[in-house]
Image 1: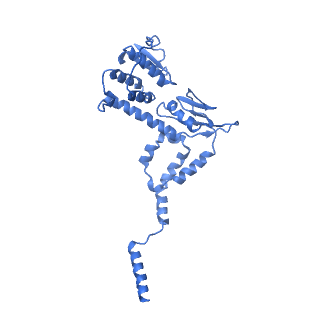
Image 2: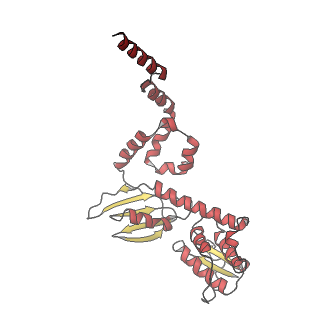
Image 3: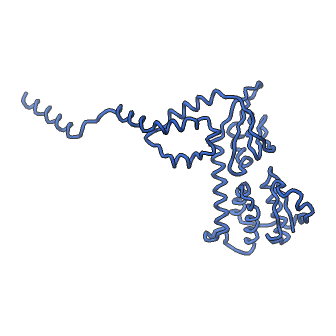
Length: 279
């Protein structure tokens, strides 16, 4: 039995290296245990070490891309599922295009979940100004992702906010960007971040763009799940905005200019023409 320890930081590279070694040595999936973040403790401390690197292992690019995403899913069986698929790919030509395969469908579903989580992280991380001195501004944020998406998503923030230092803390992994260098560290409890005056401005902006005539609660909670609300400064206004949506919409309708019916314009035109004829 092979027990493969996988770190919480650099999980994708560690899994890929282990999978190459195992598949190169023809180790079947049932002989492999995947230990993410030392969750198994000392239970398998005497397990057989991994085989040495062997010849280059080929796999479809579509599988590699999928695996690079699925490894960040929260499902404890994600590594075993991926390795089992890689094992099958040795002999099942066209497996990655088989939409009827239930195992592939499950992996595709997990891939979609991770991509959705990465999208939510980009949309819902809210930085607070730490007001520190120095040439570069310094910000920090607290976020609670559904999956392990801090590491694959952090480069987006590094590109987007390259002119400032920042930290994104989560219970699982913390990303730091200091002087242009991105690094990852163990997760931590929610830090005591200072109040940020920009949050009030963000709330005002959110309230002003809220359209009561287009309120669709189910669609809104689908795009902005309630689990994120507690860390979004603008979310504190949602309840009042929804509660007052009907009254505000009625007020907008009452204030709208009235448009005369089309026949009124024809009548006015006839009256003007008749008046000109009389003259």
